[in-house]
Image: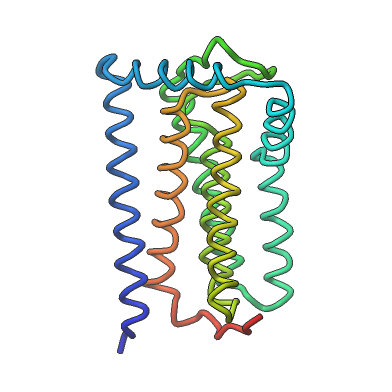
Length: 220
């Protein structure tokens, strides 16, 4: 008998998968079939340029470096090793699969669409703009972390702190890329949608086929 809790999680991940996939398709369609979304990009860019000040720029530099895809991948590897040492194979595999799908999808999409970056960039950078690698990997990392560790925490305030921390972490990293001019706003939105899509797909498959093998959590 499948529990209500499991059905609820399956429905939630399916809902996130559908919404994020639909959002990603809309963004791609709007970018490749016309210029209707261009004003959105340029309006946000102009607003960001207007609020740039030296101390905030330095903070954004720090956030974008700390939240780089390479840094988050290294942290994910450390977490995977720690989870395996604790016998949490399910969550270790969830991290591995989610991050792998996210990185592969990101590379394929960048090479497919080959969109140029904004001109008002404050950071030395190369490569294609769409979608944002920082936004994709940050969303994938923090969504996976939030899901994996949510049931480890016993107190409701601890759970809230985890969720809010993941949202703030992913949000700040993504915003830093717009602020520094490394990406258009739609690059960030597409990267965020792609990250949600990758994790929700992975969690959905795991929840349907592997949930019964997931060990009971040790609360902290």
